[in-house]
Amino acid sequence: MPDFHSMRTIMSQPNYLLAAWRLVARLCKGALVTAVGMSLSQTAWATEGGIGRPITGQQVTPYGGIVPPTSEWIVSAATVYYEGSLGASKSIPIAGQVTPGVNATAEYTILAAVKTWGITVGGWNFASSFGVPVQYTDISSFHGRLPDDHGTQFADFFFTPVIAGYHLTSNDHVALSVQIYAPTGAYNSNRLANAGQNTWTFTPTIAYTKLLPKENIELSLNYGLEFYTPNKDTHYHNAPVSVLDLLALKRFSNGWGVGVVGGYVQQIGHDSGGIADMVGGAQGHSVGLGPMITWSGKIQKTPVSAALRWVNEFNTSNRPKGNVVQLSVNATFE
Image (tube, rainbow, N blue to C red):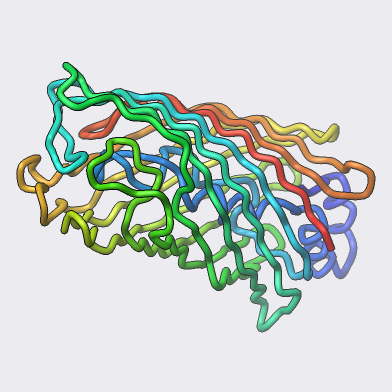
């Protein structure tokens, strides 16, 4: 992550723009893998089975709009813990049935990697990413209408063939990508607790980062729109899901940072096919907000960064309402 004392020194020089880009590339290590890893495969709610891709406030990451011009491998390990419930007055389609209310707990661990290409074309830099997630899920329905279910399984493999980043200015950066989930995770249409979705999902995404070097502040946003293919086993077709996350972070000279992170998930339109009509399409939304702490430094000569966040969902509809904690650790290798 950037050392903003160094950044101020560089920007005082005549060639500050090029130097600033190089500094960002050198010190923003680990940010990209979190942006394209943590946003790729989280457990969530409002689609078939009560499980979709995004969790409120978890997609945006520090420096998410910056793609370094260097050629490196950035690896990440992250764990997400979610606990929430949907009241008995609401119903969701799950395991081929409709049940009023659920209690859900999910622990999701992602091992991901990003390869930056090390080339610059007209101000654009490029990268690719992939990740393998493992998920523990524990779901129970209200009133015991369906048997409790839990399990630890591989979730859907994800990849992003091309991430294209553009440096608008030395302090303004944007990254464009299409994230893809393949239906490779464990799935059984008769189970409540499935780690896999049994659908392909395509998520066009834009990430933007604004740096304020004088104040040592970063502002970032991440917006994605998820498109699902129909579930071939149940014929259920999830409507697109809009996901907007925002982050504001203040950094200090000792490597620590504190900030706030929030998110808004909104299903666009209504689900169709299968038993979707029995629940009115299951259209839902959620809004959440919470604090975030970051740290960056080196272990021996390897740049390492870590982030811890907690988001409380305080406004939901047709989705379980709960809390989520995410811990991620990144390291960069040349």
